[in-house]
Length: 259
Image (cartoon, rainbow, N blue to C red):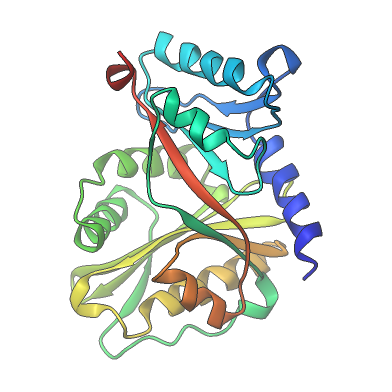
């Protein structure tokens, strides 16, 4: 892959064209307002040292007026270079950085190889979403009910844009992952993939990647993209053939914390 060309394509299709686009009066910002149960975020910006502070303040005003928490999804190639420091000064709280990994879907679309006793279940209804939520809670140790509401709504309203898969051992979910398919783009995005501690290191994550890559290829997507934890999932994705485009860090803002 030509990483510079793929990075530019990713920025155009998955960031600049993926939300409400605000003009120069707002510092060239793209944001998504999903409401109390949805995702609220700044996806992309084209800022300078002269426009950054005003643009940050405007997004804080917008989401605070709606009473919504939101994230500014920052990428290491974004400008200005000191944007992270400006976000911190405005009251944002960063999460851990993740690598933006991209691979060519056709080259990753192999047969999933699962350990004995593990099967993959395609999710099509609320019962399946409940299994997905349980798997995420086992893997990450945090409440995933809000994510469950979001995914169920998307599965109900736009099922063709989503594929959710749960790895099962008997009746117990041990891992879950999803692929999202944005119409008009060349990228399928991979999410989740966390595995219950006792089932890690057995190839389930790799099998979930292969399954989703096959689905993406069948739907005509050229690339698959995933945000990977630097020290855990990034090495696995690199061994599978993914390359790193950037580093992304969510900077979170809550009206409560900013008051």
